[in-house]
Length: 192
Length: 192
DNA sequence: ACTTTCAGTGTACGAGTGTTGACAGTAACC
DNA sequence: GGTTACTGTCAACACTCGTACACTGAAAGT
Image 1 (spheres, chains in turn orange, cyan, brown, purple):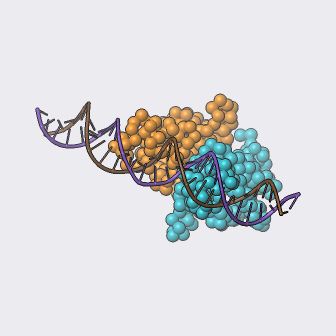
Image 2 (spheres, protein in one colour):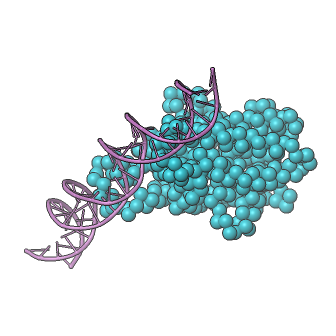
Image 3 (cartoon, chains in turn purple, green, cyan, orange):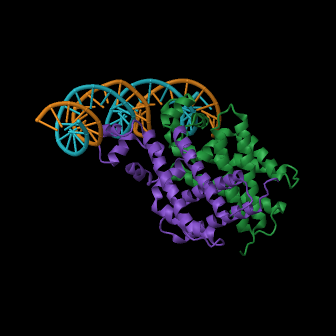
């Protein structure tokens, strides 16, 4: 799995990786692959699951931080950016195979992101940010947030690593987009 | 180009298509490919460009409609959904290779979508929706809108074609997300 | 009428592909 | 101490792949 991610870090898409390439990168003979997965798709599914765990850890970290409610967006974004840096390859995988891979992979990624959005919605509810919004609405908003997060991650990822001020700009844009969303959510009237 | 899109309509990603497959689907011998493109990437770039034109036509249509400003979102979404239905394959290509393909393809798609967002921002300005927002802010909001559009398109596209009520649900969700965004944009204060 | 361009065909190459089957060592279990 | 499960290796299979080269016929240009 690590070898597959490593290969993708050069800008390749998962679908374009061959079984032999992956085993070669893993320092193992092709036939050994079948000892662990029956398919390249199966490896991908395992990666999705692993990334799901990783994402849930992100929420836990964000939750744990004491929340001065004004700066909560900027702060969460900071955590997220750090997170993207640390788990760069997992996030890259998730974000770029979300629409790219086989239907099977797409479906499992969609499941994972929906799960993530749901947890986020529950968090928002428990923290009583955005009070007065129905659970359905919260779910909708969180879906939007998650999409925005993954888009931003993709932007971060094939950034020319030597221009920190472009990264700064991108982060700024990301924060502002989230702010728009939460501004809108705060204004939302469920019956309208 | 049409053959490539056709192959993708079965859920395959562009990157996973081989030159031979494409020519086979086009009813032509592999070597003929080189008469038109020197590369599969070059074909992809041509597709991106064609889709760009298509997208700009979308804006023109949306603009031409008389605007009862309350219903403008719902109405634009209707146009967009119709549009996704008609140019299904092009939109599918655009949305799914956005993060998937070679770095070259990614870059050209990004260029095209940014261009699209810019035009949309200019439209908003001319129609004086969202007055009081700087051009930079409008650009940021439109970027968010375009991302949301493409995400929705991807959702539309691998929908089980026999469940119209799921599609209805998805559309409803899409409209609500856009409404959140525009609500937020209307509340935006540039100096904050 | 002669030539150039264009789009297509056929053959052929070397390289890479997924998968099978038989075999080897090493750890774990009773 | 013998059996079983695990993980790995090697050789081989029938394919597919991208690309090079030489060739053909039709259209367009002068």
